[in-house]
Image (cartoon, rainbow, N blue to C red; front, side, top):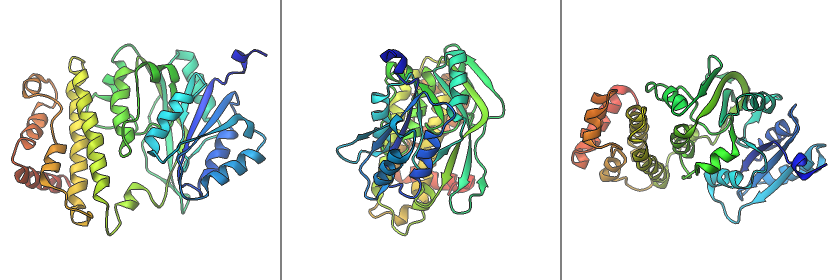
Length: 349
């Protein structure tokens, strides 16, 4: 058989970092997919527990373990960089990211791949089930209501940006990407915190063919140590919120490249809304940070991605934009006070 025929059609990429209690279930769910012409790439991001010993034990004992290979980072680089490593080393035509504390439905790859091949998509997105780790109880989560196809420049982006509601999940997992699409458009994860949001804000602008599916193919495990659990700590390292602010600055800077696109007004509104949520998180937990968070840092986080001239030409959400543009133009202390009052009114604080 030729090397071309031997080449896997799908790469399933799993970043691994301190997930010892969860990674075996994740890995088995991937190895036991109904579709088998795939490779599994595990990125060892150098955690401090026994996650990789569990991985190696499963691979050595499982009948499909030969499909997997391990790539080790030289130092801990975070999940975003682990996904970049997966994009770089994937041998398949398609790439599916799976977080190592979650697990796939048995037919996940088969369902996603059939759609990708039928329409030659850049991406196929499907629904997930959110599961409580302790109880196994199913929790409310985002799901697509019907199958939809998007063909043509901006068709998918206009769907995402039809308004400020969620029309796609804010996650990079459970999307089957064409690898060439990711590489050709330079789509990278640019942050250690909030990496999915930054990536997806870039991703949808490049999509020319996509499908969304109501089928549940992925199980997202809500567990101790999640973001919400971490925010319940008595003391929160201030560096964590600063990392999120830095990620949002990247998202803001990338908006300029979309200024002539049909969805630019709503895209900017979505970025502003995302940044204001980060400000509300910061204000809600400000007294528990390990170091003071300056008012000037909060004001800088709110910097609007569009110019005033652009905002005055927007067709949608013009008042929304003007409000937040003005908010970010006030003196820092007034910006913080106004954000706090607005967050309280919205019940985000």
